[in-house]
Amino acid sequence: MRRKLFVGNWKMHGSLVANGSLLRDLKAGAREAMEGGDLVVCVPACYLAQCSEILIQSGIALGAQDVSSHAVGPYTGEVSARMLQDFGCKYVIVGHSERREYHGETDEEIAHKAQRAMAAGLTPIVCVGETLAQREAGRTREVINMQMSAFLSVLEPEETNDLIVAYEPIWAIGTGKTATAEMAQEVHAMLREQLVEKSAEAGELVRILYGGSMRPQNAHEILQMPDIDGGLIGGASLKAADFIAIAKAVL
Ligand code: 13P
View 1 (cartoon, rainbow, N blue to C red):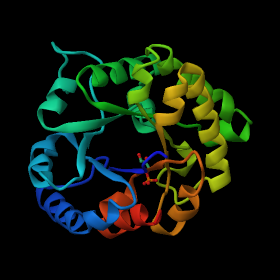
View 2 (view 1 turned 60 degrees about the horizontal axis):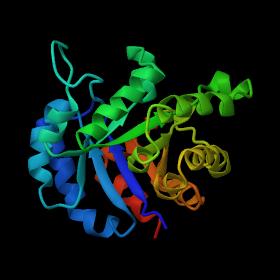
View 3 (view 1 turned 135 degrees about the vertical axis):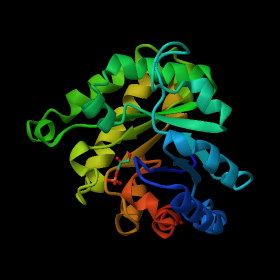
């Protein structure tokens, strides 16, 4: 049985004051929430030092929202996997649809980012998801399949065990619309089949998260599905009570 995982993606939100108060509230409810699964917060890079210090011995893991596909060098503005690891990051989101859309990230670049993260001992949370137009054109399977194959193809079978995959239908992000539990399960089952083809062990071990308007109200139903192993949570992760309630929805 895979332990559930709840990842808060703060995106470009926060301040020194707001982070301090959010994390203090989160720590206060963390013990109960962790009965539901593991907790991670992926914070803006400039706040890693602050958050890492507040989270010491809390059991809540720290993550980043992006990583460079390069190891080191003249890449202005980029942050390397080693740097993230230096600040106590255990996870990093790669290939979020907002990075694909606003920064032109390609499947190939995302695969290299995932590899860099793994080489530095971080667990990449690789995101895939279709647009509304692609879903309406009946292309969901094809699109997801392509995104997933692109990064699986550069990994060795044994590396695949160390991934987290997140299915985030783009039309459900920040819109208040969620995929129904059945719609999400269908895609998650397909993703798991792809993992099994690469490595039976990865098929068993890899946690596949759902993301897109996950809230305390809809979490229970979504998390009942056999191939949904947790959530990648945006808006609701900015409120400690909601993030905790989502993790507890499993219980
Ligand atoms: P929302 O939960 O705000 O829809 O965001 C989902 C997301 O993009 C998490 O990475």
